[in-house]
Amino acid sequence: MRIAVLSDIHSNYSALEAVLADIGTLGVDKIISLGDNIGYGPEPEAVIRTLADKDIPSVMGNHEQALLDNDVLNGFNPKAKKALKINKALLSMESMRRISGFTTFILSSNGRFVHGVPPDVISQYVSKQSLTRLGHILDANPEQVVFVGHTHDLAIYESGPNGVVRKKFWQTRVSLAKNFKYIINSGSVGQPRDSHNEATYVIWDSGKGVVESRAVPYDTLRTIRLIKAAGIPDMYAELLKPGNLWCQPNP
Image (cartoon, rainbow, N blue to C red; front, top):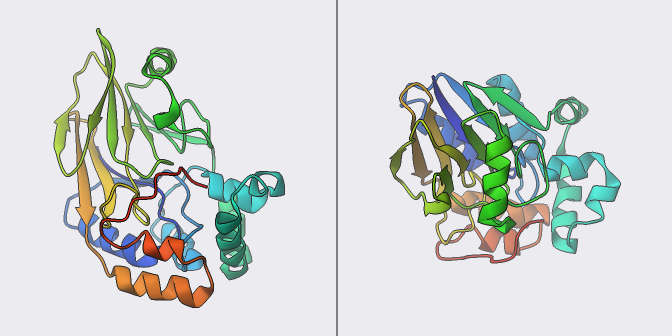
């Protein structure tokens, strides 16, 4: 099965539209979202409706969680909190109900899909875990491959006989060894934080044991204009310009 793995769309409908057009040329059987479909960007309703219309399941991200739980929202920095409150005002009740039904993980084709850290943690960062700890997590994980988001940065963590190794994963294809385990960070559709401003996502061929990272250009200027028009903090527009890199983790 060929699965497209999206993450951190962040209300960027232009980016999502471009990614879905790219996916349409690749013979994909299924699409899964790793959460944070909302927040930061200007078009949350269009994003959530598109996921619903195309029957794309999603796990719960920390931005969805904060939308539903004020205690989580209060842990956000002021700019992220403001952006999410604007997003909430733009969402229909139908979309809010859909978001409330998101689960903390999805299983498919001997793969696990979660927003933060396996097995089902929403708000922790894989990049903040020691490689030793990630090895223990993968040893305890029954699935060979775990897909995560949250950090907005493409990467592969490979666990083999010599421990866990982190590898870059920019626009490349990687064959997965059958006797190894993996955590694969699928980047971000709507707000990459790796100095590139293309929409990034991953294709996983579970039958062949191959993953491929994709980077898709789109009309970033449209999204920038809409962010500013919505009153969302300008920093989230600036991050969509090429060469910009925000070194602080979200939210």
